[in-house]
Image (cartoon, rainbow, N blue to C red; front, side, top):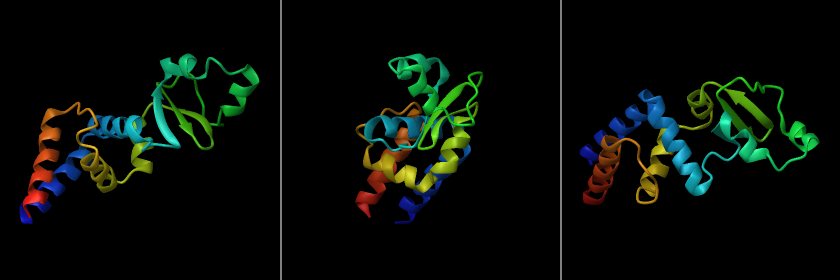
Amino acid sequence: MAKYSELMTQAIEELKNNDELFVDMVNELDSWNGFADGFRCYPMYELDELFGGCSLSEFLDKLGKNFNAHDEYMVDTIYGLESTDYPEEVYRDNVDEGELLDNIIERVDDIYFSDCDFEELVRNIIEARDVA
């Protein structure tokens, strides 16, 4: 059981220290099961694709007070459409690394890993858990 705990700690530390991995994992889980419902970040260039079918008034109703079209990302929140240059901050405000890791472990065969070393770590966690 000690090996399992060590691997879990290592994976959580990796999620805490690697913003790109953290964002990729939240996005991947959200694509699979809606994990980031209420705070999903999208690249700003997808604005027309996501909301092009809305009338102007419908679109304006979706805008939150914190929207700037010059930011890199838009955030589809329960309070309206906002924007940010830092999706990792939005996700870290809404997601605990342990909860994220539990969801990654649960969906390991369904999601895409942009980091092969992290995928191997997750699979080692599962193996250590199953052995214990």
